[in-house]
Image 1 (cartoon, helix red, strand yellow):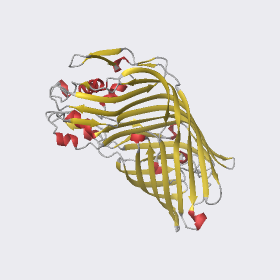
Image 2 (spheres, one colour):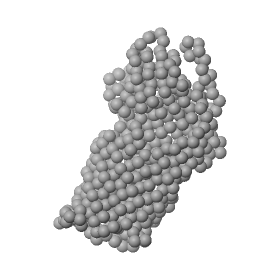
Image 3 (tube, one colour):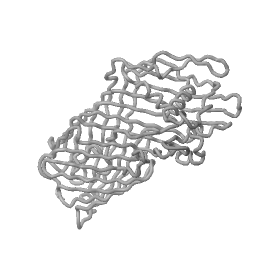
Image 4 (tube, helix red, strand yellow):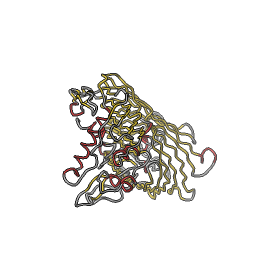
Length: 475
């Protein structure tokens, strides 16, 4: 735990990510009638059986989203075996900077359901889920990588650099109801139990490096840690190159005693399905939409660290470029970058306070068309937008779904969006009493020789559920 914030700082110049547990929502399954957890994509969806029940293995997904990958930060050592980062002096500036975008994002969500149940009652379809969730977001502008790689005597103006992470428990109760032949609506209420919250936010960073003898910096930064029992620990006294002393938080001294529940909140999922065949006799056409995770958690104890935003002299990044030898070690580079960035922020303890944080809502809008002559074949369009400030993203997918038998479905799709192009698929096998599915929204692609995926957009999902009864929906 003591290295979490040091890594969050160093990650602005180094993104060596091997993966996160990510089981948010499998978009590739949106148009499947036999997907038991369709209510997690749209609470209006009705399962095609009387119900189902699942255990923790009902939905297991490993992956991550992002527009920057290992291939953008790690290179083959020009002078020997192994890997070096883009900071190595023998990696040219043009080559090193070619992989970075204006805003470089890494995102991950996790969901583990301990209890997952669906059943028909109360004139509709009902769901109950109890589980744990978390999300992680990181954003770094192009300029901060340029600063680390190509330090020049000029002005740098950097903003929107930050990272956020949150973990909580969730108890969800959902219900969907058929209003008439054309319209179906659904909603879900979620009670949230806060576990941990952390946020790093750099509002702006101005560096004046035009004077080779003295650099000046102005930084507005805030770090928040909402973990019960958390303390920053003893501060560290430093001396700048002008002989002035100042105090800053030493992230090696962070500590947690007696962690536990640190907040409560609530959220809602809302959705609808509109069957245009029933409404206007447009055969096979259906429109649907949902908005998920409209809610917040109020954290009781949040430790705040902030700098005062005053200009100061800065002498970091002097020896940031590694040389052959021990300096080529990745850990050495992370430690050096972390030390320099911590010194640049000069954060000071501002005590504890309570704070409310939104979850980050997800909007789904979909159109599907089943061939009138062969209803087992459907074409679909799904637009997904995550609304979470600088960590927002969107993607659009075109899907083809075929279900030649009530016990078997398969779908393939292709998409494009903020985080790049992707290809997804899912196979869903659901005979009576048993449901196995596996698929992916983002195919992994190529691996490095070390077995690390070269892309940051990859995931693999599988799960086992237990349907109850025969199929209720006629094909």
